[in-house]
Amino acid sequence: MRNVWIDTIEKYVGENVKDPYGRVIGKLIGFYSDVDGIVSAVEVAKGDLGFETIPVERIEIDSEGVKILPTWKAEAISVAAQFERAKKRAKALEDLYAKNEIPRHAYDEFKKKVDAAISRLRSKNQEVKALLRRRMGELEDEIVHVEKALTAMKMSYIAGEISEKAYKAAAEALRASRDKDLDEKNDIKKMLEKLTKLEEEPAQLSAPPASTKTTIPEGAPTADDQAILVEVVES
Image (cartoon, rainbow, N blue to C red):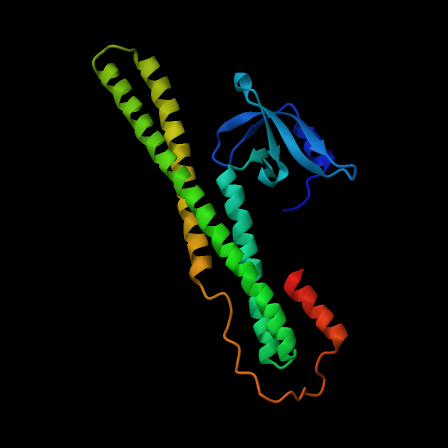
């Protein structure tokens, strides 16, 4: 994620902040920053429900203002980005070895590091997917609840128990809430598909069998060249 600077966030202090689905989370009332001017977190007032300190990893700023990402979304975006980066590094390592641009001992060393990183990410990925499924279950329960309430209001209106004005106001609010829940649910489905695809796709290409000879071809990397490889694989 890009750094958020004080001069970027301060203009939104005092304004309402929403989640990506249009729900008002609260009002931005302050922020925390380091001496270099980079914001580390924001403080949001949630009406009579109190305050919440939200880390910068869950903040997005666009033309509509400041948006607060749900925890599941921030976690999913993070693990997906790490997974994609690790798999690119794995492929880069395989390509370098296949072209005889690095010696076997360097390949073996960095392959262990990349494989270990991918293994950790697979475990983290499972945790994040479980978080997404829990949130989807909560949304499904909430959608059912809203639809029951909408049905009850419609029955009361048809029975002449409430006015058309009251019914329309209630129905509009309930439908808007349901639509936001559905938008979030669909977003979770897409992210689950992405995380599953990242997990199931081969992380790297198969390296060709190494020669039993220790002859290093002309132009093989020196110790300095191998230092560059460290940057490619680990940076």
